[in-house]
Amino acid sequence: MNLRKLSEVYSFSTQEIQRLTTELYESLHDDAGSPIHSTEEVSELVKDFRMKVNIEVLTVKDACLEYVEQ
Image: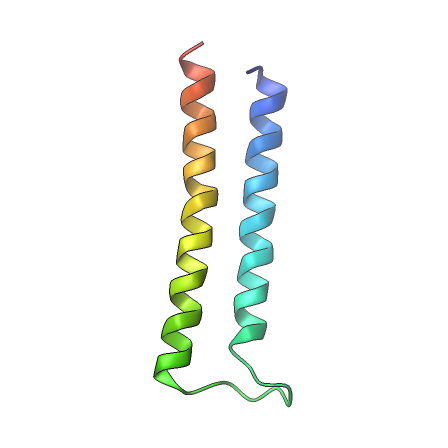
């Protein structure tokens, strides 16, 4: 992996985290724009968000390790 590819991975993963964050915010509101206050529903949304963000964070970490280990 070269520096350009490493930067591309960083860019993609961080953009995906931003997209996921926006998606979470929108999911935390109903169609009328009122915040959801069901603890079960919010917990499930947050759990799903964390899982997806963790994947992107690990992708960043793994890309860095791959670059360094060349």
